[in-house]
Length: 357
Image 1 (tube, rainbow, N blue to C red):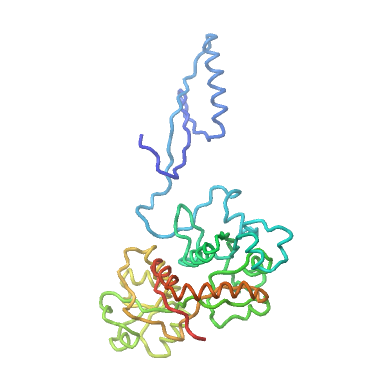
Image 2 (tube, rainbow, N blue to C red; image 1 turned 180 degrees about the horizontal axis):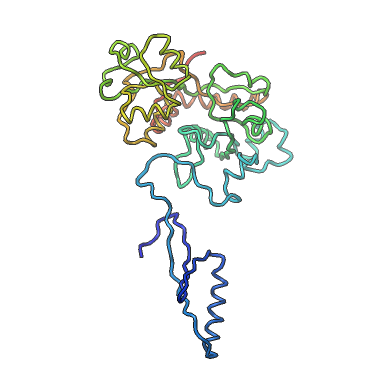
């Protein structure tokens, strides 16, 4: 019998004369006792039941070779950091009582730990990493900032995709930073719709990069370098429905077909329904993992239009002036050294510097 692969589940199989049982691991002790009783009975002249224990390996669903990201499976909720942390509204580390009401910078320096809230499924920015998988570019950046001071980073996973946004009642801010369970929140774009910031007494840090809708092409549209080229060549472009870029294309008379969200636009490219598309720049990284067969590439030298480009920043409490300045200074240094650019591009996502607002 071939050896099991890592992660396969071992299930014992009990074969009796004229009868087949499959039993779970907790009953193995009982089987041992039963076997002993059977042996004793045989010695007394009773009929012997022949027990033979064979291993059976139950393999998981074979997905074949895969590079893409999938949500990690949770086998043991009581020992799973995701379950015990953000999604159960527990802080990942205990904060001493005497540090609960001090400012964030004092707490971080004393504990030598930065506690951050982030979404567990926001690739390529953050995710619950297992088996030595990359944790996401924002978590890497925070780890580098902490490492400069020999600090550690602890993550509290929160749901950033609540219906009315992270700042709504019961949203990510309520469950994390407002409850003093983390020092900052990752994964935010400065979109202009920031009405939750003042009521929650929160502020953005200095932006560390920008994202936006970018042009990707393949096959017949390969020569296109801009939306003006797409319009001139009369190429139908795929767009996410009800998005700022679909409004822009309609306003400027660019032939287009809309699909539900970025992943459906990517599917349309793979199936050749369209040969050009405008997708969120982070979706390029997602596509390279989930759809490695895709042939499209971002148009060389393309820069997002100002109308569909947004700065990325972190969220900190307004009163945490020293901690905010600390993060801002770190971003300045990392932007000047090219560290942020290198990190972003390593995740297969185009880097665009912050734009002036």
